[in-house]
Image 1 (cartoon, rainbow, N blue to C red):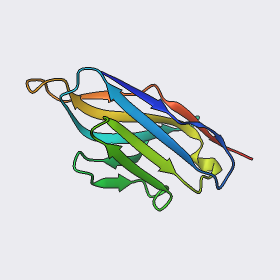
Image 2 (image 1 turned 180 degrees about the horizontal axis):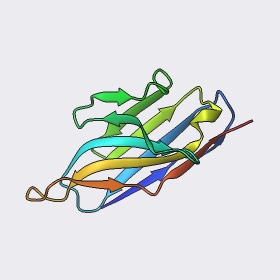
Image 3 (image 1 turned 45 degrees about the horizontal axis):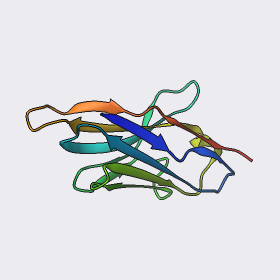
Image 4 (image 1 turned 45 degrees about the vertical axis):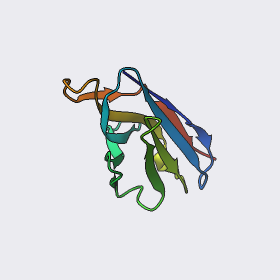
Length: 120
């Protein structure tokens, strides 16, 4: 199983970006899908989470600006980021709990990360 992120880049303050993360490989079930971020010198933090049923949760710092969504048919999770601020600059990581068969337990998988830089 692999998670591959895309959509990062350089954007000016106030701008928008949309991150995508696609899961591939031997997938039976995907549970929660999450976006984390890690800025230089800081710990990795949870940005947004979405359950298999579509319930969402956000860090206070991004509420009202970021929206997480998922397409279960495509095994993909998205993060729409609006009104970006310089403090949103970080490497963003996709994370998901995935089982490969009905006999297999959920395992935690991580993407390789995608850089988001907010700067004028």
